[in-house]
Length: 338
Image 1 (tube, rainbow, N blue to C red):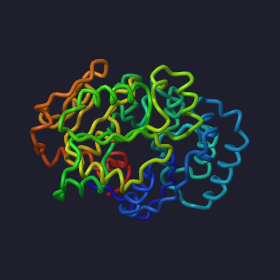
Image 2 (image 1 turned 90 degrees about the vertical axis):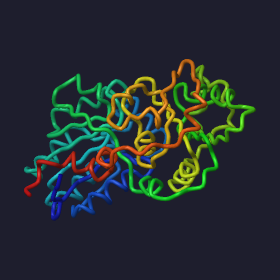
Image 3 (image 1 turned 30 degrees about the vertical axis):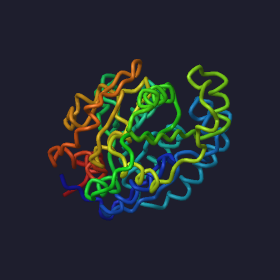
Image 4 (image 1 turned 90 degrees about the horizontal axis):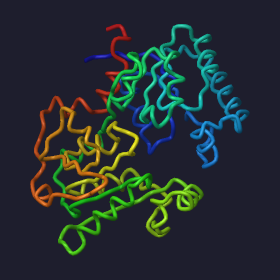
């Protein structure tokens, strides 16, 4: 699947999300595109994120309006071929229409890495988009225009697979504290106590304010100690280092989502074993019961035999299908003259 992005200009709007937006930008540039990137949100402080996520954008409407007015002004003399939106929730349809009126041949591609069940406002962008992708296959039942495209792994994880690494941990977990994640991990930790299985668990919360209210209002958070949570995300190199040193990685998806998380696809890229609560993974072409163990989030239990067996290689074509390069090719195919 070849695409040509040389001498094409992409206006790329995506949230600041653990550096993935930078990786996507770099890969588009590797294909020859000129990429003009802006954060999809005007700011990344707790209150701005909260107002946007809770659909209370009217409270900060002036800030959003000014932010996008500046983007429209800064790009109006560019010859933009594509508006590429990832997880849009701030940009208004009015602003997209304005961009379309200036760049009349522009194509609009939208990709969502949250399920529509979790974020109903995602559907606001359906009609305005030329292509509309979701990471959650269940979303495709809503409208035939919605296409299913799983997430991707970046080169760093492929590099793990290509090198021999000394294992330090049998099991690791790195993730944001949400829903019942903590409870599940603590239950598994309790079961593993007293065994010779080495573990590394890292819980992250993006805000002390958010965590305070979660502890106050959510039952699953009340037993979480402040000392068990970090409010600073691990650097990309630290995450990669821990995964490199681990035999198995735990992934616990949000209960309202069936799409595979970024962590799941990263572990595929790293050729590591996966312990997951997401039963949907059994429907994917890379599923191998030797490499992936699905457990019940309501009765979490790990099969000891699974930890003993080594990772089993999968077909190279299936493996490469989930790379960032192929992800971009899938989104942009059929729109560029060969």
